[in-house]
Length: 396
Image 1 (tube, one colour):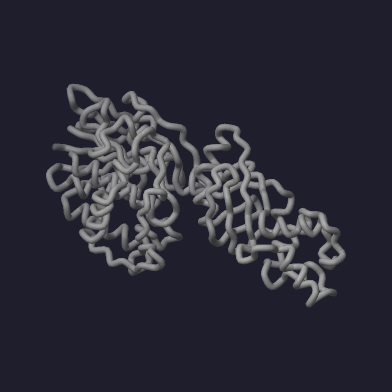
Image 2: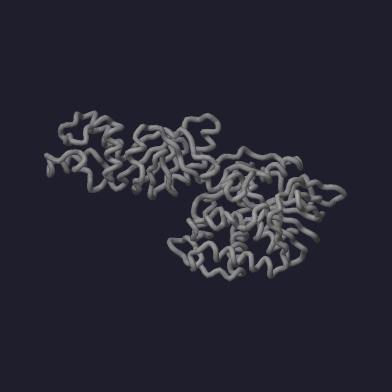
């Protein structure tokens, strides 16, 4: 069989390597180089897998049982694929990286195995049209045309357009009668409008952050920025928040900057006994970042030079709450230029979940980010890319 894979990302290569065992496979990539997004993964270190494979790390908006795709059998295929490529893992707290700690080594392994398997790789090939006539797929671009027996769409989502992602796969899916579930940025920074962002900009602080709508919490380092909040724990909450905002639902989070403290008022009362003349800034400097505390005090309209005992009861309660339950309205997210992935995509109910073949168009397959399937930070989205690429490729 003659198979075209549209896209040159990690899912495309997993599909190509898996399909090449029995077929003539061609990857068609619009960019001058393949695997551009892979090189950005994990700040260039490429966290490609995670020991914790609990199903809660994977998400879809489609009306299907996600375990039909993400299950132990398919996860084992992902592990076997990396071993087949010869990747030696460096495992830190359950997070898998190549031992070289460079994404470029992952790229080299994928390209080598694809070429060794006989896969043709054509770059600078921006596909403009895919039609099916007489059970064959006619594929054209400004500088290319050919006919194929089967097609795998692996074009990504809208995320990181700098890598060439335009949402073209969504357009292809719709042209063949498929439904695209609402697409939103995911694993993305959140935007606030408190008036204190300039003061806390650049602060990194360990905290627990809670989505006040879903009640989901994440603990880790929060990065405070000139536009709002960032960091892995923020990213993992951003999916639901972005969806809520797209539906005009008010979205807010609570941040506990002192998760070690069960009763902040009691703690500060006792601390002020030992240090009665210290200002609030001095009293708290050992456990709250100076810039962050300055920003919080500005928000509360409390002078940095006042002492704890000079505050009235309401001011003490407000400060204690701000340190352990700082409630912030989220007014937006950063756009697709900043989002690592997207939520939403091709409705999974419209494809065979064992093969990823379209139920509407025989011999048309989809894999990777074009699907309505996404994961948390921690290697889960690369796992989705490899897993779905393998399923599509093996089925051809």
